Length: 161
Image (cartoon, rainbow, N blue to C red; front, side, top):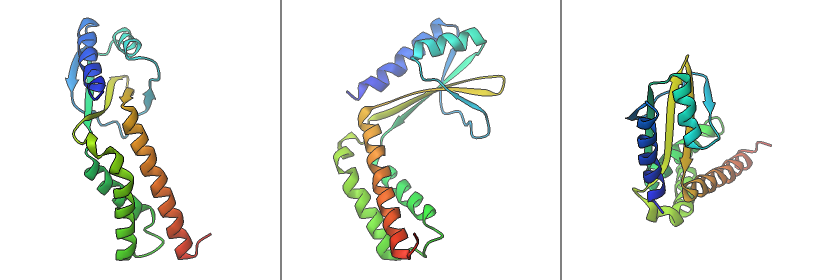
């Protein structure tokens, strides 16, 4: 199953070359650009890129690293609740251990390809298509739910309604 994303990346590279596009492995930073998120299939995405006159298509293949994800989510939880308290060690430990529990079912996927993001640019607009492993989506949802629960608990403990 982990090869689905890798195989799709290989198919996109081949399809891009056939469409006259140059595939580039790497992540394109689009933070300040308008973004069109493509919801169709990748073949139509490549056809549109070629028709629009794009030259390059960027492929960003993300591997899953559960410990890194957990640490990033702990930092996010602390940022989101920064105005509520000074974050006692108990709170930090509670967040870390709760996310550690939540991540347990996905630890076996460490190092596997989890997400593929393809991007091409035209006239200052980033066109983005992505594919994610189902388990990766489920893991992210579980983490979000756990963070929401922890955030609600932190609000309750701080006496905020």
